[in-house]
Image (tube, rainbow, N blue to C red; front, side):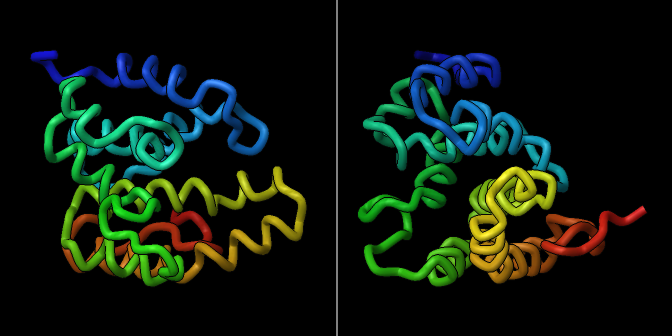
Length: 175
């Protein structure tokens, strides 16, 4: 493919990739689409595409090379690789704690990966989304994502990727 796939083409691709997979109470392909609402700061189409594709390498047989052959840019694919939690892809190594993995993503300095992982975790830890889960599962995820959200937010603010206000886990939405 000579041209980078569009957002709509990528969403169609996700329907195939995640067919039969579930994300809580919805088809899995809706998770990355809904996560777009959580992108903060200035971003471009490559970051949006990376967010849409962020689970493809982890939850399917597709590889980074497959994504490149489909027309996705190296910048988009690198962000996807960096946020993929699969040994041998990106910065994840078997046995890493979740916080260690988030720190490794931050240490790459890859702005796209920071934006993608922050939006993903912002959706995963949104109180409205957590209300749909059994209380014990919601508590587990709230605890799991609290420190990573703080670390990612601090890294993004340090890199001037966010306004100095905004929602942290458990913080009220600013008016």
